[in-house]
Length: 302
Image (cartoon, rainbow, N blue to C red):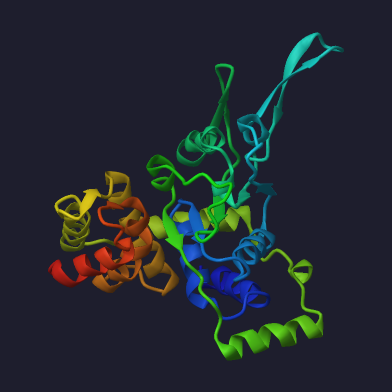
């Protein structure tokens, strides 16, 4: 299964410069069956990365630009009266896709954000008592701007817990920014990307990830990390059991991406900040990532 993964990485690197680690983490979320939240300042490539991944997978892609007037039915769809048949017909919304990009998700109201809870966790939509399953695979990429709070609605903890990973891309280096200018001058554009993976390839990759071994001693290490977030005085709300499961799945995906069929402690340590930090509520405004790093330094490594 290394060949399709290599094709995907090559495809993404054609338009996304200097973000190998971020690309790898997004693929970890995709292969683990979760979703990803890209949380960073404007203009660093969040939407570009999401679009590039969507174009690389031969599936249905939908983009939602979140605004305060966005309604839940604008996401999920609704029943519309058809006068010709004298009956209501369900018109599916943009969530009925394989790759869903929710741009600036924190600009949507809490009511609209809550419409994504069932969608992201159960991969289904319930309208007027009828449940409609979503196409598979289903992957949500959401972006938000953490430095501009005017007209935004912070994501509730229940919504944040649905995201497998929360990533920050950061500014490119000087050489990487020069490469960006050169690619723009040469005419390299997102529209030139062609699909390199099919939906069947993605499902096969996910099934292979489930076969990556996690020894009992490593499962206990994952438990120790997560449970320690519930025992610190500075943490008012620790990571949920969903976070425990997602940390193991993410570690399996990272091991698979690095061509191993077994998980090592370094896989868990590398992903713990991205998987756990956004699930914590801390006192005193301390950066959650710093607290997770403290836990990694204190919890015994097997």
